[in-house]
Length: 359
Ligand SMILES: Nc1nc2c(ncn2[C@@H]2O[C@H](COP(=O)(O)OP(=O)(O)OP(=O)(O)O)[C@@H](O)[C@H]2O)c(=O)[nH]1
Ligand SMILES: [Mg+2]
Image (tube, rainbow, N blue to C red):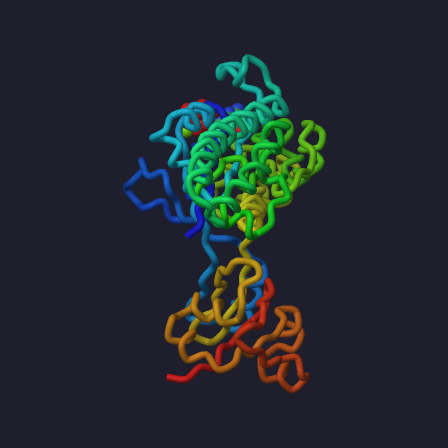
């Protein structure tokens, strides 16, 4: 499963966010408060609706995994053994301190979200650059000894990476092709990882948590490729996670909020990982399955079971909106909204799929 690493400078609210995520939407294994990996359900109003429609015995949401990392991400990146925590993550959620709290000194001595983001980015760039240069040196020697197409390709991609990094631009903005990315995948470059900026707001700003983009803009964070912004108020969300559902609405309203910002944050990180959901429906189970965007029907079948993939005949596909409007698969079929697709069909987010298979 793809993990999202929760990172940031020290004392910015990483662990607080991790606890909120796993308490409100997941299962931080009971009795293991020290656990720092948590599986979190991805809230999805479409699946809510399908469950209402089918009233199945079981509803299963998509999940993502979050990893809390200790202390400052800058120290982590510099400590070889700890850097593994960062390298294993498919995407990073960078918690940025915006909240004021007299008793907790802010990173860098003053509150400056923009500076904190730039500092962490620079650290990633330097770490990647060191790796690139070391490898290029090695390749230079090897290629001189013996001509090798694969090594030359790697050399060429790493040269392009070096030029980008020397301009202090992260690799996720280097415009690498999918093939280039495959060539350098083994390096797990930090500045290549998709990044979610999580602005941790103070209570006075809580009402703005649902307008993260605007807030990010004000904080001087431009919208950059393969990044997204979310804002939460850690303190408010932590209290919210303790409340019974009936009281939650009133509590949110007292801060000028309509809904918890956490659902939005989880969906943003899911999307940033390049993941989409397709659904299967039935009286036994309605379920959201996770695939990478661009996956074929055959790959989607394999996500459910290798037997279904092996015996694949056809995928019956209907758009979520069409199924909901029709009210049932039978009615969608009679409206000719149910399509039969083959192995190579690229499944889209939100499609409801039924696999016809042999065996
Ligand atoms: N006022 C306020 N305090 C917060 C908020 N979020 C976290 N804190 C406090 O900030 C302190 C640090 O929070 P943590 O979640 O432990 O921060 P961290 O980033 O995990 O810290 P390290 O792992 O030690 O780097 C704690 O005392 C929290 O109660 C917030 O939104 N508002
Ligand atoms: Mg912590």
